[in-house]
Length: 302
Image (cartoon, rainbow, N blue to C red; front, side, top):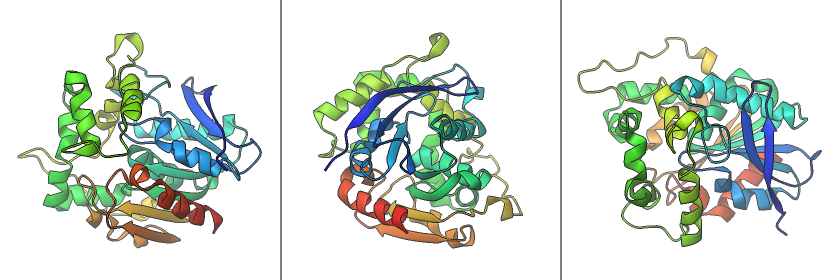
């Protein structure tokens, strides 16, 4: 039986950020925090909220800069440490001392850092197609194939990219989901929800999409530009090790995040299991929700 979703919650955190979030289930049950990626919103996790709201208090926030959450003007407001702190403060706002964390894409990047720096707040980490930060840095420094696959990051960092993404009724963002044609899960109704979300302007006159794109502008991780030296790897990987149980679900047909990003992951996680979905793409959450739910459920139960 599917749990009902309440999608009209707002939390003003101690740092002043106002986050919107949706929930399913009863507060007091174990907290599962679902953290979305780019260019999505809380409703990336709609099927998961319905499924897990029976046994857990399932919460899916809009990250700062996305959908109905605060969208401060300026790249400096989107540093990873600030978004990590939003998760810490949201867990406290909800009245919990720790949470299960399930995350995808940019949400996964934030969640890796959250687990590294706040292991006491994470009961278990479930990552879906999001690279560990040290291994991503390694691949951006050493792997020409991943450098090429991540070339879009430099394009997004450029001034005015939000206007290009919004042009022609968000044609480029629509294409991001389906490449040549829209997949079956990207229904007209869902497309309308995304278009409405992408149209919401930011604060102080900032453009729609600016907040979400500022994640790329604020990140220290990106492929080198032509003629530019690659990033320098931290010679000491120990501070990047994860001391909470980690379960990784990876769609192997991800064109932006290559499977080589999984190489060496066991060296960074004390308790790790990886499940590869050969036919899954970066959007495997949408493509195979029942299979993903089963894998998340197994991860939370053990």
